[in-house]
View (cartoon, protein in one colour):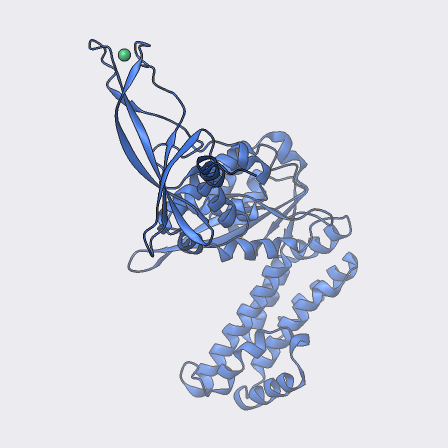
Length: 435
Ligand SMILES: [Zn+2]
């Protein structure tokens, strides 16, 4: 046990080669710990002469909380100047990145801790900033600087990829008109025994950005990719056609079902308008049915089922919404089939059935979509038979989307998303130096 008071302070502060000069305790303020570095850097960089202490600049740093209180480290940085009158070196301050890099607001250890909290644990920047007692930008800057260095250092992060997924993500709304800004997530979809991971994020949701990114990757790496997983969109289809023409393209089940739900919603709104002459209001039967309609049927209990039937009875005189709802449920059941041949026959027939004269226009449109994407949809069943992609991608995409708010700059969003969903090797965090 240490009983020497000076050594006790040093042990508690826990920084190497640092002398604790004193502690300021002002009620309701962070504890202020004054320290000085013991590193002797008193030699002139220009002429090699002995230097002398010119003055001491106190630098205030936000440190990790201690014993339930916020802490500020006041580092009295020595400013040196050369003793040689003819020398033009001027003055300089001591550098010790173990305490904090130059111009930092957080101590090095607080910055690494914040990076881990935000990047690994997925806490918000706001929350971590409140805990430390600093502003949002301070924490964000630290996470970006340390996070980028970690991602650069982790050269093993992106290994061989079997199934590559592309997904559009809204990452911010800009300006008074809240214009949407999109980016494309490039995802390792994973496999039966491998979790999905975010590989990168590129600006925009057109084919160009993703194509350019793929062209920059090594030929060997691209050659190993067997599957391309995409939503029902032309641009990403073009990415795979142009940049990875050897891969088998697969329509992501999540997006197929989402599309069916979107058409169901479209049908509901049209019928609502045609029967009542206005957009849905809170007492209109179809408006009240909107959530029950898009919910998976097996997740409705008996009373939900009865309620839905009643609301449709009241608001859907021609049975059109009911048909669109049925179409959605049948499309969902495509993924209950295991046998690829069976799935192909099923989707093929379904595409025709949905285009029957008795069906409303939204259901027709679904039928045409199934026809156009038949090979992509059934490729899912065929790939699964060969240990292909799993549905892990969509959990990951949700994870990525959840953090996509509050960021104005794609660079910041990219680092944040990659730390959280890109599975970097966090052991490297202790070894990196931020830029
Ligand atoms: Zn000098």
